Image (cartoon, rainbow, N blue to C red):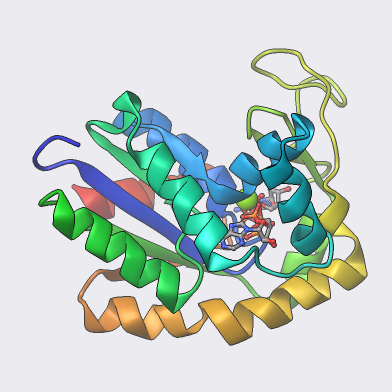
Length: 217
Ligand code: AP5
Ligand code: MG
């Protein structure tokens, strides 16, 4: 990574809009959007051993072990397209991952630019996830709140959309429990480091993105 790269972390419970906002923000900043969830799903689609192992955790709504996740993410950060920075979506998600990221950035003389935390009430989260449709490339739609131009195909490349295995109601509830136990403590961690900026995740998608973009300027 170059000096003064922009490194943004999108933090927030499942369904708060991390992916939706990260795709838009990365496009505006001209840097890649990296979602650990998307990386695991790509591995699964390609039936790699990593993807098959990750799916055993994901389908139960549990986190994939830190060691696997950190190794995969660090390898991704080494790629050339990350030179000017990245928008990280769904990583870090445990204190161990946060410390691993910070020590990696430290080793290359970089630091986090901003951690954007999105807040959305739980009742709305369940509605958002049950109506979500995804493209293989990581674009996110919602049947009611953000429908694709053509049902159920990606606006960008026309590929068929799909619904995620872990968006079933019971798995969503488990994901929320795991979030509270393992990821919520990161809010205090990043606040103490002076990196946290909080955003209301309820509202127009583009308005929320403007707020995040402006906070970075
Ligand atoms: P991941 O894929 O990251 O899932 P998640 O954290 O549960 O988050 P989601 O993708 O469900 O929600 P989102 O916040 O991205 O919301 P979205 O923008 O889609 O991870 C999946 C699994 O992989 C994990 O459970 C774990 O097993 C594993 N994993 C991943 N990272 C890991 C890590 N670091 N360590 C260990 N394991 C890891 O929006 C949701 C819906 O709402 C969409 O339909 C969207 O269109 C709609 N929407 C968005 N914004 C708005 C708005 N403003 N108004 C109305 N609707 C909206
Ligand atoms: Mg997502």
